[in-house]
Image (cartoon, rainbow, N blue to C red; front, side, top):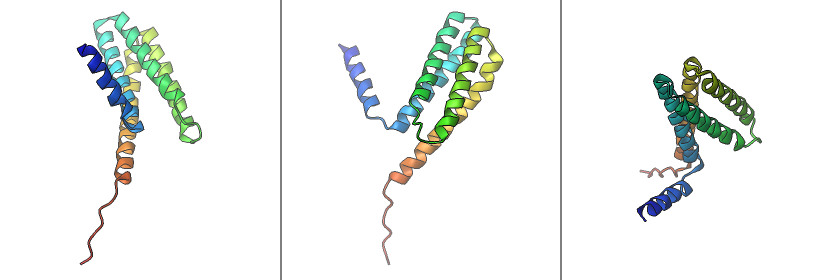
Length: 134
């Protein structure tokens, strides 16, 4: 019974998020799976590595699938997502820590760029207080 209530709360939380918040949530999940990949490599837990890499690639694919292609930046993001997915596949198959260390900061930087953009959009959307004339 409690689990059902928690599930409803999660669904309601997701349904009330802005597009920017949802995008950041996806990036947070992607970063979480990259960290799991790092830990799995250190522990030589290859089952966890493969599962985490697969989940990361699924998130990247979703980000790519949901791009709005009417904007020129979508092409650049598509190429980045394609690169990230390819490199994460190399991490999974080759158990390559160096590749993971190369793409993780890039993904973190992209996440931070989206966070900043979302924050700026939110600030611009808020009505500015009227200054009183003296």
